[in-house]
Image 1 (spheres, rainbow, N blue to C red):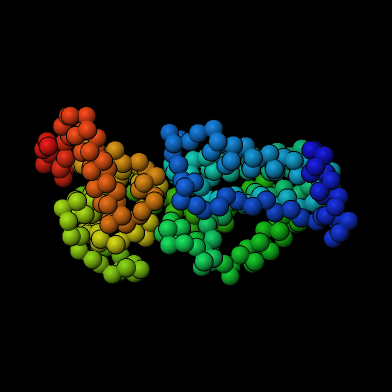
Image 2 (spheres, rainbow, N blue to C red; image 1 turned 60 degrees about the vertical axis):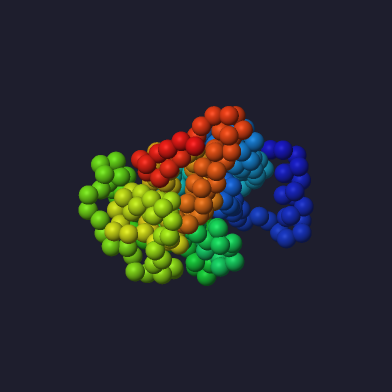
Length: 302
């Protein structure tokens, strides 16, 4: 173990007594950290993958041979997947394997990896809140969840456990079913949910109307409002990739998946598309060429 970590543990124990448990925090939920593999670079990997895993290995080595509980906070992305959280999902899978390996080799420490939902603390920014799933754990529930996990680990339970506020298998089936519906082109539409945070607002511009139509097609809804949040409508990161691909084809613009996550309403996405079209037009004019613009298949040149 690194000398600095060993020294830090020694100082901690001198001040507060023997270490009985270590909780390794999971990844923060931040808009700029949702990336597909194509958008991942070395710096991102170092921040999200290498440094996080190195911390677990270092502290674990410093406490090796001692009956300390090691609780690794992971996410349900390790179980349910999600293209925009692929790096954290990979790290979570590794943590689960690490916990199992430590347990199998007879480590004196009690290792448990917990895959759990995001937590809704109530002070998140509007952008971060829009990304939280409906199944998010409420802040008031966190102490009870931690107590339960620590009790499991202390009692000898090891390896991996999943914490979900709703039926996990149902969520997995729903996610897979939604992907099949999109791939096949869902023919049956269900009604727009009545319990959305925002009341229904009719899209106003041609771009907004076309975006709403594509969303409705992909999500299998009868209609989508101007201020409806994609995740509130039941969307997920896997479906978002197909949705962005459809929008690129409909508007003939480059639309990054990240820009979709930056604004998860019809109004936000329509604005991103308008900006992309304007930028392409300016670049073409500066180059003395032409650029195709339009909505859907109604394309023209200027």
